[in-house]
Length: 281
Image 1 (tube, rainbow, N blue to C red):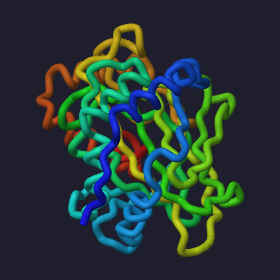
Image 2: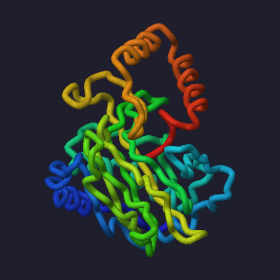
Image 3: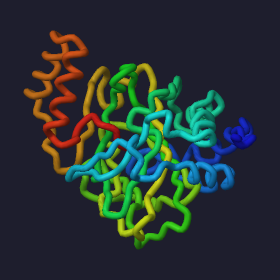
Image 4: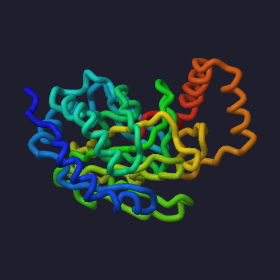
């Protein structure tokens, strides 16, 4: 049975008002860290439903830049998990996000592309990166990341803190420990560099778990990273695309059908060992 839990619109409105100013002025890019986000007993049930790492439905990402498990398969979501995800994609919650961030017209992602369930075992990591912006199915612009952590008793010594880096990748400006019932929301842009690059040192059998949701809009303002510009996930240390390469890619997309472009991208990512426009958060 699912718990009788629904976000209160009044609670969400108050939460947005409390964090709005801090969100929009936060460095190195707009973000909010909200503790005691929802009833603990509900999240305890979500944790109880989390599939074991050995479950074959996990999408295992294993490269020099990331070692983690992601789960977008809806059959992986237990009844409580499904209910919580529905609440996080409901109209009242979208109103909260719009009030918090100032971004209008937010749209949830029923595909959970790159989102859903995340699990990182001992030794796993996620290098600092900025996420792709264009949803591969809907073509919508990715505007927000939301991470809801599920880790009771997580200690700083285990590593795994979410790091937020400056635009020039010179310094980590924020370290956010992934403790139980902590929600992190941040604006997704070409320069919202984040990750948890240090290999986890948690005890064997323990994992860094979270729910990850991304929110989109039809368009991105021309003043923000360029209008109608598509970019892919970029890891710190990767070479920035040159103008000539960008022009070549734009030419291909102009003349090739979308299915051919998507197939070429998929082949490129396989050859690169899982890097590029792949699920990550």
